[in-house]
Length: 321
Image (cartoon, rainbow, N blue to C red; front, side):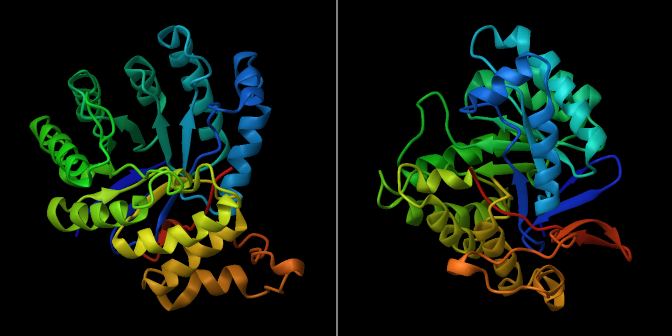
């Protein structure tokens, strides 16, 4: 069974087909968040601290860390800022981290200060990226997210995206990186623009699981881009991708509706043994007014993570902006 191991200084998480869905909290990312970008540039990490604590309290299994505050000279600004952000977050929470950058110098700088075994997000099928990122992952013995596009861009043909994924997995093996340490992002397209986007990604996930035997992830909220009431679409999408075999997603765990969908999918998928985490989270649930999603009980939001009784404990998670 394919298992991707990530870890903080104190907690190990397993991403796998027989594990609860791994929720990678997306909030520490200044892309599209002008206020956060301005704060980080000024050395103000108040929002970063708030987002880190809130996401873990909501049940994030991991946290994605991005410091891409500007497209101007990112090679100069991003390494130091990413390191500072990593150090702050590692001092606050004990979940594993995902190092999110397209700047190889920033990725290596973050890897040098990372505690445990982080996930590198990401490498594409472009030759330049393969040659820059894969040696770093091999050097530091860390897993990597493989995004299914290359020099030709993002194909709308699922077969082409699968071929790019296969290429990345094979190239990773050339560097001694095992397939279990390649987490493929098959690229979720907006359903409002491409009516077959859902069917495409379900088919791709099944092929990636059955043929390449790799774990998968995605930017979950991409599916609802441009549509009203996006969180309703996202919440419906979650159990469907989990049913197809997806094992993790970058999403916002502070959205109760989507968190609830993740936890329910874990129950129905058999990865929440004896419904333990569902009962722990919702045992005191009372219907909210207006049909709002169930809110977790205080101090019981998690659905996995860490070690307990010799087995990997589970954390849960949930959704986007």
